[in-house]
Length: 537
Image 1: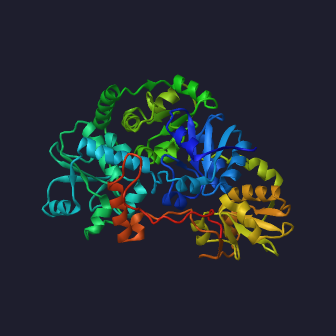
Image 2 (image 1 turned 45 degrees about the horizontal axis):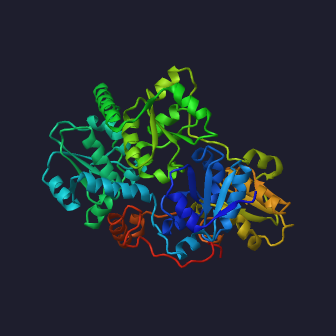
Image 3 (image 1 turned 120 degrees about the horizontal axis):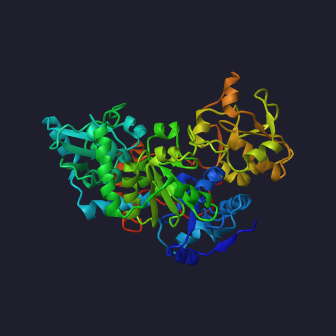
């Protein structure tokens, strides 16, 4: 397929319209963090076959792709054509042309949600407490409950001393299990700012009589003030009681009326989902991972409530599409839907009765984590030779794992190439297309797709390690660790500000606090790099 092209001026006009469209940044995550177009969905090219079918369900949706200079976008457009998408355009000149024209450049990750968090703080005047003030109150033994609204994994790495793990979407259902008295102060924190404010305001929307405060700058502010985090905590609230569920139901009923959030039946959801190829539909299950894996509506994406709001640009690519929120009733869904509606998503609904109602309607559930086969995987399996673990001979071994996975363990002598730019770099690893090339990855899936790509390029002897590095290890064969031989920049992994050190945390908080409505801050989050070709060295 030959994609169309769209100029920066035309894209500017498109982004001001409300019609169904998707803007996809197909670079890797670190490149996206350094600078991107506001409200673009970060979707590295290597993940298109896996994630795009759920992000853009309607094949006729207008999709704009961009990378630094257009080379990777053009390759990605070909993949989209194979997947059946018919209205695909590449940004002329890529992000380099966008930036050269003096258009807004946005740094950071999940910026639309961070902009919204700052708006909520100022609009609702969320009560705050500084880390030093909170530390003094804790030393005095003041009566309070501290809740960490991040993911359990983030909480476990480091939380405020004594905090409970309670991701933002769970607050409406579980806060009653840890608060003992109506005058007990509830302290809400996250790693920085957004989830603290949204969590505190979620509790305030519940109408609790308790004093509720957000910790200014979260765990980063705590550390910057010289205070120690608790590491390895594992406090999770008890299962919701009947009283907690009843209160969540009452609150959700009130909020649904206040927000005008429609409750839709399983029949209505199933009907809309059946037309997803013509109209974009996303079903977001906002429960915990364990609940989701026990049984979920087929086709629904696990997007725990706090993260669905914190990372909307990753979960929703078509803002004009339909969003259906799902939980075990409608308490958690209603709270999440209310925030999404306030963020400007025009079509947000909640599955009335949640998963139990879906099951009562006689429809099946899926269990376990989602594991959809990437588009083209089965076809690639039919044409690519699989090689069992064993002697490598004179094969050129190429790993297409994420760079951090490669560094944790790869076949001896394997060369790393990010799969998203495989065609642009393979000539340096295997300049002779008649040479045998063995593709590897953790489990053999991405490497199978990569081997099929090389065969289409004329590498007729491209093969794949059957079962990937996992099978290699299982056979008792040795692996190498470390940087090895890497072609191109390892820009697919982003460190958190607190992993980068004090200066990075200070820069992050300064940047976020000053974000304007378009995601631009007068303070740099990261130093911008000069315009140039995509990261191929």
